[in-house]
Image (cartoon, rainbow, N blue to C red; front, side, top):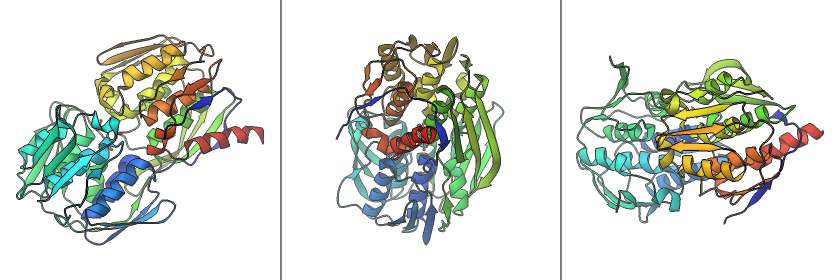
Length: 441
Ligand code: S3P
């Protein structure tokens, strides 16, 4: 059910935000737990709708996925190759990660499955995974244009391949590597820029054999050995840096704010936004850097800052691909111009994020120019009119970005539908409200 929400500027944001678990790591914890032998205990699992879709699919496929208390889940796996044919369609909701990684896993199981998703997911390209998975032996019939719904018949015998990623995508890399688990021999993926490596880290944690080789041209070759013994392993999920981005940028923009964000995932393939904001002049302190559950984490403190526009280089895009919408909001409050390049992947996310951000910002009085793979925002610090209603197109990050804009505009900003926020950050509105009451108390 859609629900509109109007956000008005208030005074400073003060307090601590306990951001929920990382979405990428949560999906992979359920998936690898579901394939391993034994029971995996997960702490800090994100209980957003995207991850719940993965959990539901793995139950349909025969794994035991149980919630014990907030964020504490167990997954008892079926063993590699042991998934059973589901009786009904697998509905991956809004989640591209759930759909694409699961397709990789299903490609290596000789069962037949139907898969669908919501209107946003049904419009997103699946050819980027169905092409390599077909080369590995799966038979896949999609709707026109390589879209969901689709039928997949996994291969009896998976062929190991070496696949050069045509787009920098951790989802595609992961789908091929996961299918490669069921192949006899080594499956490799070549990437020209580093994309998030949670699949590789977690596979190693479960006993898989993963290697990474640096290539002369600056890229990498990542390989998995087929038919490993995957054994249940406990997982501690760090807080999601992509979710932390919203209260973090809100603190930078709202005068007088100071927000503490403990235990944030600091995987080097995910921290492009923090680098970018620091270059823009943000007051962000990174403390207590440590490794927890195989992933780097740190505690962050963000304070109100005077920002200036910068050029965000294209090679940084993969490490902050989900953060461009909220960066656009920060840019609207920065002195000068912020230019973002090499961002064509934004056009095939939960919405066309270049077009949707540009439309929403323009409606609220910000000048934005865009091209196929770039966008540019002209900042108006403290001087953005607001007052318009923004269409969120089933995109959680668009909804949360314009929520943050509403905290600093002259007139309130209305989001047509706040319901998608539940896909990745179910308690976002409560946590933001608590920061506001923090300042009053
Ligand atoms: C994800 C990878 C990214 C990101 C998505 C999560 C993942 O997609 O946008 O939110 O968990 O692997 P691409 O790898 O396709 O860019």
